[in-house]
Structure formats: C-alpha cells, structure tokens
Amino acid sequence: MLIDTHCHLTYDFSQIGGTDAVIARAENAGVRYLICPTADPEDINAAIKIANENRNIFATIGIHPEHAGICARDYITDEILNNPRVVGVGEIGLDYHEMTSDTRTAQAELFESQLEMACNHKLPVAIHTRDAEDDTAAILARFPDICGVMHCFTSGWNLAKKMLDRGFYFSASGILTFKNAGDIRETFSRIPLDRLVVETDSPYCAPVPYRGRQCEPAYVVETAKVLAEIKNIPFEKMSDIIIENVKQLYPKIEL
Image (cartoon, rainbow, N blue to C red; front, side, top):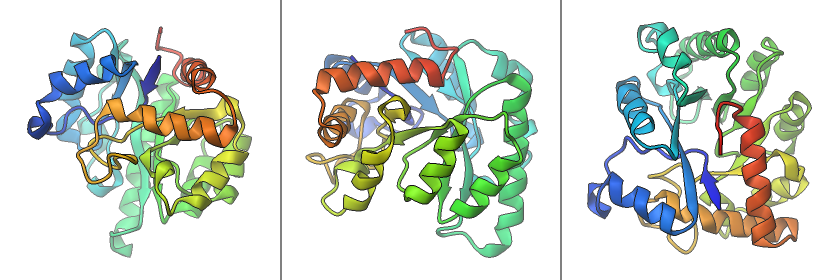
C-alpha cells in the first residue's frame, strides 16, 4: 500500500480518461491514498470537494509563489483550514526560476502569510522552493514551530541538512528516476528513512518508464521502487515506512 502525497487532482486529466479513472487506476496499482494540493487559488474549492467526496483523498490548501501579489486570506479561510479533510497548508514557498527579481518581495509576503496561517492552525506545510534555497531557509527560520515536507525535493545536501535539523520530511518525485538525477539520488541516500515520502506531482514529472506521458498517481510506485533501491531495502518495507512517515507528517490523516 502506498500514498501519493502530492498529486494535483484538480488539473485536467480528460486526455487519459478523467479524474475518476485516474483515481481508480491508482487504487488498482496499490496507491490507496492521495493528497491533493492546491497551487492556483481558483482550485481551492475543487480540491476540497474532491477530498470531501472521497474517503481515501485528502487536501492541502495553499497558493503557489507564481501568484505572488494576491492576498492569501482572500482565498484561504479559517473554515477551510478547520475542515477535517484539509491536512496541511501547501504548496507554498518561493520560486525564482522563471520569475523576475521584482516579484521576490511579493513572493516572500505571500509565503509568510501562509506560514502564519499554518502556525495559527497547527498544520504542517508543503514547501515549494526552486532556485531560492537560501531565502526559503531564512524565511522558515523565522517560524521555528513550523514543520512539514519539502515537496518534490531536488535541492542539495546543504538545504536538506538544514531542513532535517528542523524536523522536515522530504518528498521524492519521478525526477528521482531520471537518468541524469544522480546528484538527487545521492542526496536521498543520505536522508534518514524516517523522513522520506513519495509523490508524483501529477500531472508533471512522470517517472521512468513513463517519461513523456501525463503523470498520474499510479506512477508513484516507480518512484518508491527507486527509493527502495537507493536505501537497499525491499519495496514492501519501503512502502510501510512511507505510510508510517505520512502519519507523522500529517497527523490529521487516519490511514
């Protein structure tokens, strides 16, 4: 049994049969539980609806840094975060990869406002960071009570060590399976077993042997297999460890 800790079920899966078919294929593959994050504020209501209507699906609610400049509180209410199916705040963070430097202040403001929400509701966070590792760590340092997961982690050991010391978890995506991802595999080899989870980040980052296809939660099995190989343990044991880690990461989830 596995759980995909980060799959964007609010996106359009019509080309591969639709969302219901995607969920069914995941269960058939042994991926019994799914966590649906938000990135676009317009997807928040849809994510909550999916989680409310499916006992094996949960949601994390957040606004991605590409939407910097908006007010998170206009979209994320206390009622939303108190929903028992909403288990965390995410995905949130910083992304300097394709964004101009003049958005950095707005990104930080959006990030910090959502960290404050997580603190107020005692919820874990799912962190997105791309080409912004130092600033991400600096902002998180101002919120010492916050813990959570580094989503789709592809950074190096320097940031991993800082976040390990904070008690964070690390999510391996399909990128871990790529031929040119040796550095990422090396970093994950150093992360303790009790801090590891897996995700697809569907519909992105399809793992080998599905590269080039629209990614879906069933494919998280391939990432878990590679993670088991890196850690030199049986796949079944890796699956059990991931489930136990998710229970610790997201205490509102009852598996």
